[in-house]
Amino acid sequence: MILERGMVETIAAALSAHGLILRGGFNFAGGEGTPSGLSGAAARSVLLVGQAGAAPWPHFLRWLEKQSQPIDDSLDRWSRGVIGAVAEKFGARAVSPSDRPYLPFQQWAMQAEGLKPSPLGILMHPQYGLWHAYRGALLFENEIALHERRDVIHLCDTCLEKPCLKSCPVAAYSADGFVHETCLAHVRGQNGGPCRTGGCLDRNACPYGIDYRYPAEVQAFHMAAFAR
Ligand code: B12
Image 1: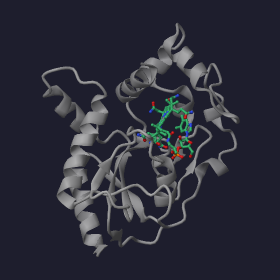
Image 2: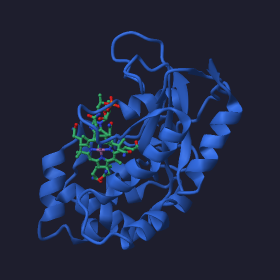
Image 3: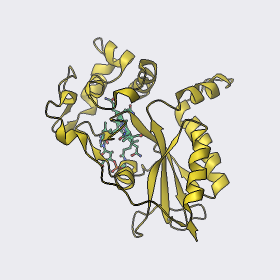
């Protein structure tokens, strides 16, 4: 049985009630590395769930305010709850970017939306720039009827200045990749205040997707989780 487009649209509507969006999907070619679906058999397709800008943030905060005790990994917990409920309704298995062993979310996103990595490792989106993320995925044991994927302009190819590689005081991102320890030591240290309160300076230096840039409060939340 094929998962019809109408069903995909219904799933998208259910997610949008929480500020989440469908980030495309694809049918697995099969073979090694194919994750399992709800019954344990190999999944035939995946729909990625994520966010553009900080759209889920007010929904998440409303949920957080109702919790009687502090919650570890609260955004993950909220995402698992919301996406898990949608998965249950539509007969899918929900997975999270934080599940271990890590699932290849960025590779899936490249396949689903035709995105490519920016010099920071974060995928560059033609509209959202670097201000988007993945909160989960729905794995189905049916194939999905999907629109043909359109070619996507990779904005980093036309960006000559590359301010994203020039704004970090400790050059944690360079042509050689991301040096996690250097970034972490700086963010946690005496001079890391601007990163802690306003987010990664390199990411904020990107000229694309400005309208989707996460507010400082949201960036501080993610940075605190990163630096914990
Ligand atoms: C482990 C991890 C990290 C580690 C990377 C350590 C390492 N060198 O491997 C650390 C802790 C450094 C990290 C940091 C960040 N991460 Co991270 N991370 C992950 C995670 C959970 C697993 C990656 C993985 O191993 N996947 C398994 C492999 C098989 O899958 P893959 O698709 O092939 O993985 C690719 C990525 O790992 C990528 N990669 C390797 N190193 C790094 C480093 C960075 C900074 C990024 C963004 C990607 C990246 O290259 C792989 C090859 O394609 C993913 C979620 C996921 N499940 O993929 C998020 C993920 C890649 N991270 C993400 C983000 C946004 C970040 C941050 C920029 C922001 C944040 N969350 O705080 C920070 C950077 C800090 C800063 N300066 O702001 C997003 C990227 C979204 C996007 N738009 O592309 C993801 C997809 C999580 C999400 N919920 O959306 N991350």
